[in-house]
Length: 192
Length: 192
Image (cartoon, rainbow over all chains, first blue to last red; front, side):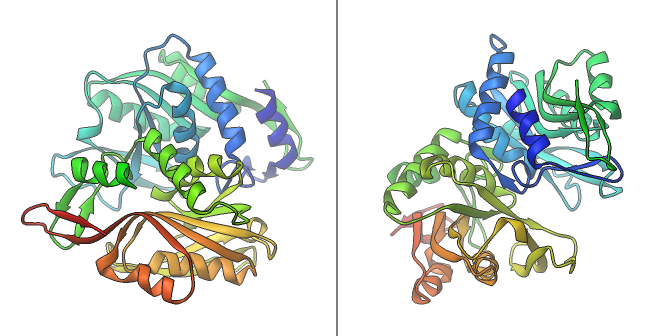
């Protein structure tokens, strides 16, 4: 999606360690007009796919997912919560996600009431790098007996391999900007 | 706002300790059509007020704020982040918020690049009870030299006093549903 790629080139900041800061428009300050265009693009890409729910994870995915939902007939958005601990009261689906940024595992939960075997789920998130967060969300959807119809990502760091692993497993991953290289010395970004 | 009050009566769950669970439509599963109507109502209430930015706090405020922003000419939404620790690198405004739910203080940060003296800010959040979170967000806006033009709340627990304290200090607080009583024995809710 050219608009998103242009915006990343304009306002993204490349840092050492393959870090791309997009907090000016995506995950700290949010450009809701851009989010709207992103939602329209996912709706175009997933046209005809039966999607009745969007799943994301707090915090950065929420704004993107809520605005995208407007392009999917206002389907409900469920956001997985990062919990302090897993509460095994049987009311929640839970899994553990390893965060490379924070270098630790954290539990993630979704209330059982909000995912059912009949659900056809589009998973949306801001970034896809190694894919750990998405693997966790997929595990939650599938433990509910629901179907992952697709995965919509804003920015995929293609060189970190998470997206290709998911595609090899048969998931449809639609990344609106797919980076194949970034250089923290020059700030240069290469899109697929 | 009648639609929100009706929805709280229909899907809200009253629990002991003045807890109102609205995770079916507001802060775990999100009804984006309801969010859209809430945004329209805040736009009506704050008509003519010069608002060029919306500030909220992760995670529950983000979806509501992003959709509300569409009714304020797509102004940028900034969400304050709950941090593990305050990083005193000078790049962030920070404050500490006491959470009665979690019974502990946590640091909250906003990047300095995203709040300036010229900003006229509408603060949006899902709940207003004792007002601790809002006091923190106001402190951040004012430490940036920006102006708090108003505060838009989905559900105010009027009997916990936080809203009245803010109104006494001169802030304009517009709560779309204002509870004056709730009874965990009968589940009865009384709106202002």
